[in-house]
Image 1: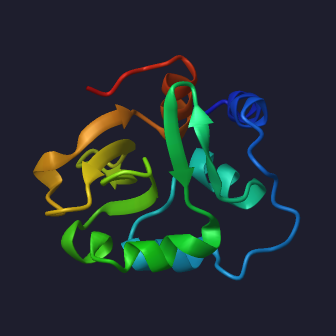
Image 2: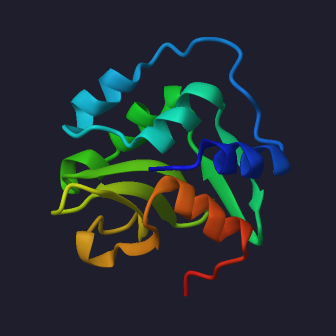
Amino acid sequence: MFNNGKIEEILLKYNCPRRINHSSTTIEQIENLVKFKIPLDYKVYLQNYLGFEEFIGSKFMHLWDLDEIIEFNNYGIVEKLPNTLGIGSNASSEFIALELTEDGNCRVVISPFIGLDKQDHIEIGTSFTDFLVRLDNGQEWF
């Protein structure tokens, strides 16, 4: 279970822009692309907020907008990394993704764009909410 209030609190703190218009991309289109259900906490983000390029805590994040996700994932992420959906980047050489684990949960990982190898995934959140909380608390990945 996720805490919708915690997501709202963090995103408002960092002035993440709210979605006021419907997106041309649907959650179902993304789920069809990756062949797994997107977790509820990330769906709430996609349905209520626009893409976001800003620091959260000490880390710069570019969380992709709902209308950008399919395009950015078609650069090899979905093809080379089954059970992985890119959701953003650190504005460097790494992408941030949801990864469906063998037990059916989704965790948040960071991984290099070059090589696109699952072995390079580093967990940075046990959920999208946990990822945001860790960022807000100043968590270091390395």
